[in-house]
Structure formats: structure tokens, C-alpha cells
Image (tube, rainbow, N blue to C red; front, side):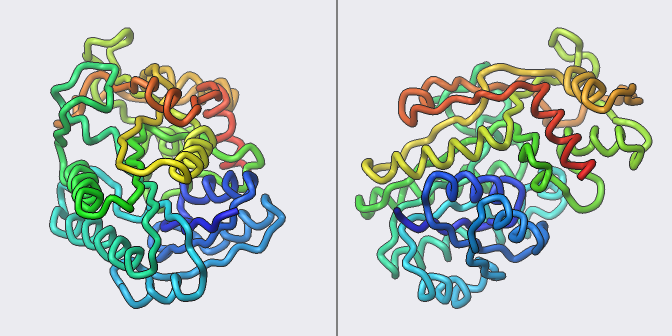
Length: 331
């Protein structure tokens, strides 16, 4: 079975994907600079898989460090998660986001090419669909982002398309995620961001645990069933299994394809809060604040292409996502 390098491998999605790849029989090598991850996550991956997993603390901006990883292992494919990902921070620090995200992908692809490794699964985002498309979002829709983070994803997608145009040996899947939440059922892996979370579910979970005083819901007057924003929330284990399907598909297919990974339906902010209340057994205080600029009312995926191309579809419920997240925090 082939060896897959996971950049950002100690992070939230990377760690769950590592467990799923190992379970499917792949060998895994992890690379992470630990700027938003913990070293002990690697031990949790090893405990869950029953295997030793090579880990390299390295930064993709350091090209020689990336070369060292490829010298140490025969890498057959790469799943590229590493990068900065906070929307608000990208608005405040655009140059940092362009520098880190674009240069990291540039260095990675240059080193992959040097070592004759041209199979890549790229971590993209539903942020590439912007404000002007109608739900559900299909892969053929025009892209357009509302913030520097989303624009770096569009630029990286274009960089990879241009790379394949220049050299048809490249095999690339651009996986556009919707809203990953949840945790490994063991509770050993989960989303544990530093500081106040940017994403909704870890924020709600911390309020439920009494670590924050209330949930701030941005906008209660959208044209949605309860007035709050609707998003396509997908269990991180479903998402991770989508990456295994992507690596498997690329073993026999060349070219570049964009593929949505979502559930195909949306849930509102209040539905998330109520699902966490069911998981933790008590009410969660929240307040409705004004809308945030750049937020859209509703966003969910058309998932037909993932089903047709990869033979993959999400299987876990919103209730399970919230239950697993609560369990992970308790652990």
C-alpha cells in the first residue's frame, strides 16, 4: 500500500484523516509546524491505530526541511491541510495569509516534483463560492471569495490547475469542505483551538462547559426557517473518510477535479445550539447580535459529484456530531 504524507497532520482534520488512512491500510507520514496543534496528538493517532507514525516538526515555508522529509520517506501521495484558516484574522492580516498559504503550497509542489511525487489532495473550502451563488453549491459554479482566506484557496486551486496544464502527470483533487465539526468517537481526537474558537461548534461547546459565558449568534433576521444562518455541517470522520476515497481515486485517475465534501443539507445556528443542549443535558445561554459583514444566509453542498466520482457520502447525523464533540471535551 502506498505512503501518504499529511501536511498539517497533527491538526483537527489531519489527525482524523491519518487514523482513517491507517485503518484503510495506507502508511502515513505526518508533517506539522505545531503552530495550531499539539505534539501529543501524534500519540493519540498511534494509540487509535496501534501503529508507530513518523512525525516531522517542520514548516512548509522552510523548503529544505520539506526536502528532508521526502529524503527520509518514499512518498507516493500528499494530502495538503497545512495553512492559516481564520477568516477574521485573514481580513486583519492579509499579507500574512497570502505569504503563508501561497508560499507553502508553492514549496510543497516544487519539492514533490523534485521527488517524482505528483499525486495531491488539496484542502480547499466552500469559501470559494462567495456571495452570489444559489444553494446548493455545485462544483461548476463560478468562484469568488469575500475575504483573503477564501481568496488564497481560489489562488491555490488555480495554481494547481495551471500545474496540471503544464505537466499532465499531476493528479489533483481539490476538496471543497463545508463545515467540519465533531470528533473521533473515542474522544481522544477533537477540535481544540487555542484561544476563543473561530468556529461555531467548539465555541458552543465551551459555553456549554462553562468556559465562556454565552454564545453570540450573528444575525437573527436572515431568510431562513429560524432567522439564523444555515450551514452544511459535516462530521470530521465523514470528512476524513472522504480523503481516503480521494487518495484511492487518484491511484487510477489523472487530471484535476474539484469535489464538494458536505452532507447536502443545512442546519441553523440555533439547531446546533439545541443539539449541543441535548448532548450536554442543560440549556445554553445565547444572545442574538447584528449580522457580520460578508456572512451569507445559507450555504450547503450539492454532493452528487462526490457520490458519483468517489463513491462517498456523509453518514453521521448532526446529533452524533454534537455528541462526539461534547464527549471529546469531557475527555
